[in-house]
Image (cartoon, rainbow, N blue to C red; front, top):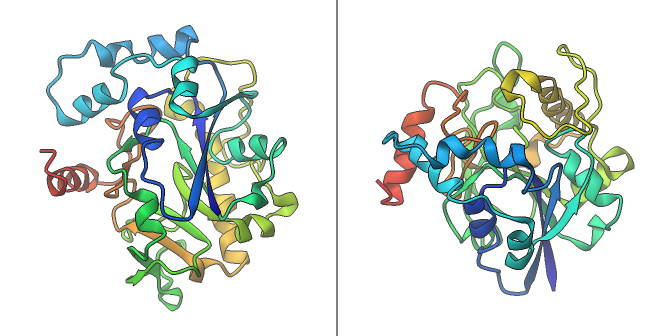
Length: 295
């Protein structure tokens, strides 16, 4: 049997996410392990109170309605485990790929063909994610020789079948953005062979960027976008790893819309309604929901 690993950073605790993510159809000859690596308990008073305004909202805006679906009820640790997730409570150090580093302190990634690292504020749209990924779904591939842009982080793309030659698969890509190639780390797939290439087989999450360093150990309250934007440095660190390892050729995207694919709408700081994702974000979300006949 081949194996897939899913690691979610437990912070926002969207009941919709935990229910829909583990409801993915399992491809033939595969098995899937699901881990929630939490940085606070689901029952923490901050985890619950931060989403109460959404649960009580009567706003008819479709993005707010998606948020309301995401947090329909405060999910508990017991419910997460009963759904089939393995639950780990770790120190609230850094976000994004740090949850993999913490998981890897106690487990062996080499047992798995690939790893999905995901935030738990993503709106899952489909149960066919792994079926498609393992059955040559159409994806977008960067054309290496087309690199352009002010900072050199933009590539033209072509549509190809997802063969076994990919190493990094991200959710969505918008070519017009100046930092288009920089991964968000919110809903991304990593082949075992890519992790083999990482120093100490872990992601570098401790670079000092222009915003300094943010340590959140012991904190259980969310601080919004600006409070932890220093953590965005690590997306650039991983992007540079892809460049330096000649891995642009083996990068793929599920869609040509940043943060949006037919499988997932990525939240930001807990909410789909937070959309610092370029001027076409709203149109992209609406298009995807119309394609799925949700609206």
